[in-house]
Image (cartoon, rainbow, N blue to C red; front, side, top):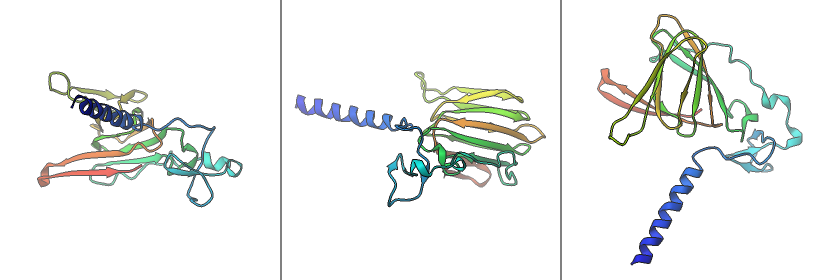
Length: 205
């Protein structure tokens, strides 16, 4: 009986260790691995196929257009323009993503989490109210860390914690964020109180 309990405890420990080990992007084993959709002749690494090193070009590491405002003509008054591995193949295995955020006056990036990435955000234009909420503390409560950011200010959102950004002003806001994963994912929690509905959506970068 004792041996069975010991075996079960070890099994749970290894399962949890395996989960934690794969919560973030693995370290690359080569200089780079340009993503390509060719399952027949290229090696498969970290969820995507790798272009032959000799076939890589500077265009694989280049993306234009982040100077252009996103379309904020929507219910939230918010848009994001990502530079992730899906738009920039050269990011594959490098463990980073860049995102441009645009906020109309009173625009909101609603409470959400990035399960696989921490995020560092800087405001380029305007004023932004941001914050994140801790997981349950020893007293059973949560703590809000919030700040008003002006142009040039920087704020960090720890991996996996619920966070938000809100433009409380009358002028558009532009911000840039860096995330510590090539595919951080976004799980958005949006309470539609006016409709009496609770909406959960998954956004893939």
